[in-house]
Length: 377
Image 1: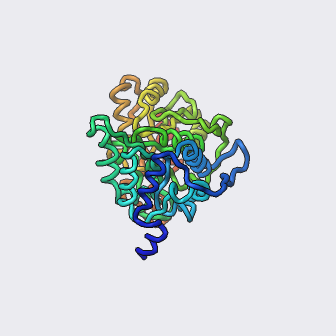
Image 2: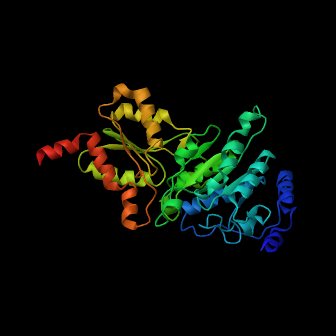
Image 3: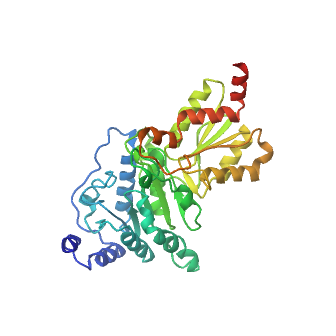
């Protein structure tokens, strides 16, 4: 087995050769390749958005390479890296054994050397095997070197609850990594987010944790010509108001943004005009946009799939209490995942993850509509 791995990897010096080739700016020979699967210029799935972002950044900068399990010959566990091996060759699309600590350390070390690695985790649950490299090496080296060493690396892969994968494959790591100085943490919702934020992350001089959602990969979104431009990026640390409102501020990230937008439509039928903020960036957190919205609506509801204690929503609530307490007309509310390991049974799994009706019910509480309804009944 080990001999086969060595044979496929090209020997013990192949990684060093890859680093030296990328460092010197030499492109390896690669087969002709074109991104496949786009239906038309204005519609893009999240999968296509991520794939095109990586392809364009690898084409624009020979220092960018991707490393991880099944990123090459298998085209990626979720086909995010489809076509990249054919275009850029095995020197820049590196398949690895199942050893997160090993290939993450290789990625961090190559970033120290001046390359721009993209480290793919099949799921961020597996990144726990490599968390020492992410936190103690990638996040802290710029500070500990007095600013002399930059670490331009992206750690990306699916995060949070999927479907039927139980406790060890369903955790949301936004709050985990969001607490660590030295990291930037991004969580895209739609195709525009995925494409613009990933391109910005690859170009950024600091380590970026890029939290995708497996259930969103196949979702299709309409995008503008601007989003399809190779120069398009989104600013790190800036949230987006997805829906304007006056009665209530709802914050969310990743898949929960879509659920909140649906909840806002339901609330509108009952006369509650909710403003929905897509956080996009967990660290740095756009406190200005959040607090400006709360000062307009006077109410706050945070939504996330992660556990409640020390969560992203808790940090948002603290920020609003510190900066905008006098504007609040009601206590802040949080909707989170249940404070239990994720169950495997489908009926229990649904109870453990925030649902549309949970958001609607909490929004009514914040707006004191639930009390009015009980009184009327």
